[in-house]
Image 1 (cartoon, rainbow, N blue to C red):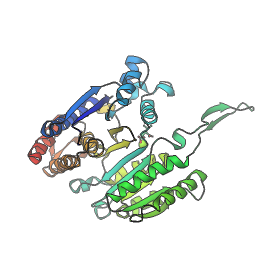
Image 2 (cartoon, rainbow, N blue to C red; image 1 turned 120 degrees about the vertical axis):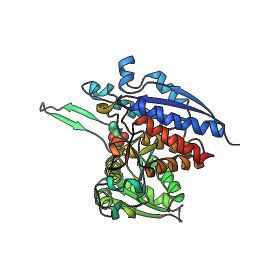
Image 3 (cartoon, protein in one colour; image 1 turned 90 degrees about the vertical axis):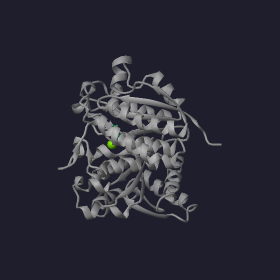
Image 4 (cartoon, rainbow, N blue to C red; image 1 turned 30 degrees about the horizontal axis):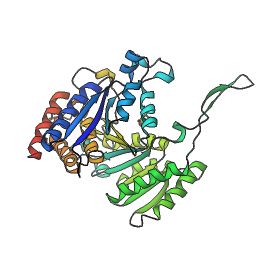
Amino acid sequence: MKRDNFKIAVFAGDGIGPEIMKEALKILKIISDKKKIKLQLGEGLVGGCAYDRFGVPLPDPSLALARKSDAVLLGAVGGPKWESLDYSVRPERALMGLRRELDIFANLRPIVVFDELLDASPLKKNIVRGIDIMIIRELTGDVYFGKPRGVKKGKDGKRRGVNTMAYSEDEIRRIAIRAFEIARARKKNLFSVDKANILESTELWRDVVTEVGRSYSDITLKHMYVDNCALQLIRNPAQFDVIVTTNLFGDILSDEAAMLTGSIGMLPSASLGDKTALYEPIHGSAPDIAGKNIANPLATILSVALMLRYSLSLPREADLIEEAVGETLKAGFRTRDIYQKNKKLVGTEEMGNVVAKKLCKLIN
Ligand code: IPM
Ligand code: MG
C-alpha cells in the first residue's frame, strides 16, 4: 500500500538558508495538499545558528529529530561569524555528523543544463547543450572519515598532518549497487572513477565495482581515472550519463561539473542511506546576500523534487516541480545570480511564487 504519511525534518540553517527554505516549503505544501499526503514537519537548528544556541553545530535534539524522520530537508550552513571557531564545532561539522550518524552514503548530484540558461555556462553552447549527468559520490568513507587522522608533533619537534584514504569492500559494494540501479533507470551508461593506477584503496574500488557489474549485464560499465575524468568533463561532458566515485574525488568533480551549468544556484542534491535521506542545495549559505530577498531558491525547490522522487515515492510530482522550474525560466524570470539582459529580475519570494503558480497549473 502507498504511504500517505511522512515525517520530514527541516533544518533551514544559516545565511540565506531560512529564505530559500521558505520558498521550498511553499512548493512542498502544494504537493501535499493536492496529493492529500500528511506531512509532519519538524524544525530544528543545525550549523552556526545551533552553535549560537547550544554551543555545538549538531545538537542532540536535532540529530534525534533527523533520526526519526523519513527525510531531512536542509538549507545551508556556515558563515564568517563562525570561521574562527575550533574545527570541531564549525558549522560544517554538522554536515559531517549528519552524514555519519544517518549513514547517508550515496550522494546524488544531478548536473542538468537548462536550455534557457545556456548563456550562463563559461563553456561553448555546443559542448554543454542538453547536459544531464548524475554524479554519485560516496559520502561516508574515504579520507573524510578514515583513521588515523590529525596533526601531531614528531620526535624532531616538527608537525606532521595525516589523513587516511580507506575503503572496505562492503562500503564500495553498497554504493556500486545504488549506482547500477540508478543507471538502469537512466541511459544505462555508468562510469566508475578512481585512481587505481596508484592508490590501492581505489584499486579495490575498481575490483568491487567490476564484480557488482557482473549482475548488471544490461548496463555499460567503464572505468576512468580521476585526472582524465576532470579533463573529459570539460572536453566532452555529453559522454557522461552516470558517474560513481569516491568521497574526495566526488567532492571535487561535482564542483567542476556544477560549473558546466554556469550557476551553482540551480543545483540540488540528495544523500541517500538505507533508513533515511537528506536533501539540500549544493550551494552554500551566501552570508553576503542573506536577508536581502535576492537569493535563488531554485536549487532548494529542486531538492524538494528529489525528495519526492527518492523518499516519498512521488516521481510524477517530482517531474512536475522540475517542469514548473523549467517553465519559470522559459517565461524569463531570473534571480540576480542567473540574470541576463532583457529578462525579468525577481527576488527570492517572487521566484518561489512564480514556480508555485506554474506548479498549480501543471498539477490540475
Ligand atoms: C560538499 C562540501 C562539503 C564537503 C564541505 C562543506 C565540508 O564541499 O558538500 O561538497 O567537502 O563534503
Ligand atoms: Mg564540495
